[in-house]
Length: 319
Length: 320
Ligand SMILES: [Zn+2]
Image (cartoon, rainbow over all chains, first blue to last red; front, side):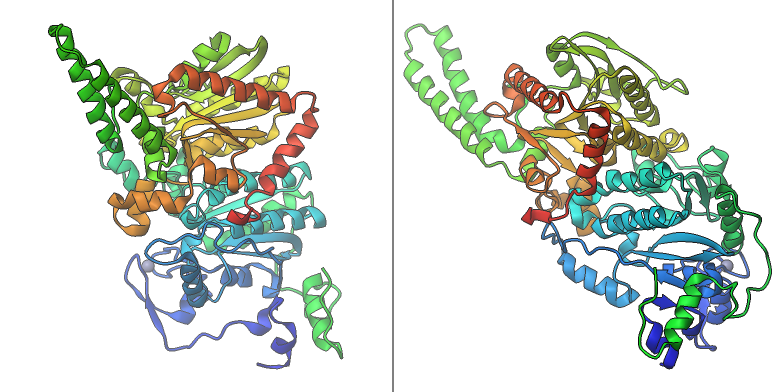
């Protein structure tokens, strides 16, 4: 750890703390089977350079590439009651949680952050499919409410990246109650006149799709993302027929009028900047290199990070 | 009783025996069986009380799905007057899994909306077993909007295995339709009261149950997923639905502890299907009481209270 990561983490993740990726590791595209360098994959936002297949990306990695200079402030999410139902199947719910925390290095299935994209202040929330299938329980509900409250407080758009198998069964009815709960959060944004943009990523299903993920002012999806209420297997069992090719995929939904846009992950940042700025009635973005650190043109979060790092005593970054 | 549930088998045997005795006495006037038959009646009565006083969560699911349980149509016929069904989503179709329209409740005009499962093979198919398609939720949104414009309270009756998992339903935006219905529930400036009468199946139930007051019948259930579905996902064995039903905390009693259910409506001994009229009357009293509690509240207060209720929900878990 160097002086700056010591100072700034865990509240600020920045270019300075970009995760180190070994040069010599390979992984295989789960669609076309092409062997790809890890570095190549991560530089390409986990999109296969051979077939354009969009692989899973963690909220943290997504935010690092999305926010200007990879700088963002993580927004604290209130802790819900742990294991509210004392649920156990073959394993105890708290044990499943611990395993998920260990394998992902994250606390829960959603990350919320404030920052700037193309000099546009925004709040972003992203669901983590690698954490118990991204499932929506009390924590995810709290995260969305916190994101909406922060957006309203700061007068910023909220961009939400969805990815979930649905509600978290281990929280029973309380996970179901996140449907109305997150809908209240969306209403806060709408009443404040702030844009709510949903980016549906693979897969977004069940109660998540049937609540906050379908209520955006603008609905964007990543290519080939599965987006549905009932999954294809359940439907095939019910109607006893084979479903057409591409059924419930992003392009299919676009064709059926359920989405505004399907956008490649590598184009997403530009897309979001363009859309947010128009909805916020801001002038067109300036494309090109970001100003050097220390210049007055720098994002407030980055300035905070730098001044905190330079301060003789640890200073809490301003909101 | 035409339909006994599996755990009612011992009861069926006793009641069958009593019936047999009485049938024999009818053909043979010299037999005096009344004392013996009466003893069997008492035994059956006691067994019924015992069985229903401690129904396990899975048995409650079975009772909640009982085919002879009163359904939406029965409640509307008995509790409302001038029921005027209103059809269609003005976009694609009318969905028979959802019935709704204008009606009077104790002379007050209201909008009533509910899932109807049907009572025999023909009507079950007609109503798609109470599994709504997007058009059902969009019809509900339309009716709630109308109620809002004209200041009519909304009463919803919930009894659905869940939203229909079909090809067309998905193509026409099942998720969006459910999300919009929940959203509408949270927006209307009129009292909204809900009764879960049988099965509150997941998102398909939430779409109507995001209400100022939610009552549940004593043996009704409300869950994020069916016990069978939960068992097949978490236990990888759909047959372990009894354990799943326990774990999910889907009974009215658990949901009251969790703050999801505001009021439990007592059922007649042996469940609503054994005395439909009494069960329906009790539901009527609960609806009246809930509307009464909200009477005089201003539109903005109702919306605010509804939002606060759902924002705070589940904050304390089972310790609540
Ligand atoms: Zn590939």
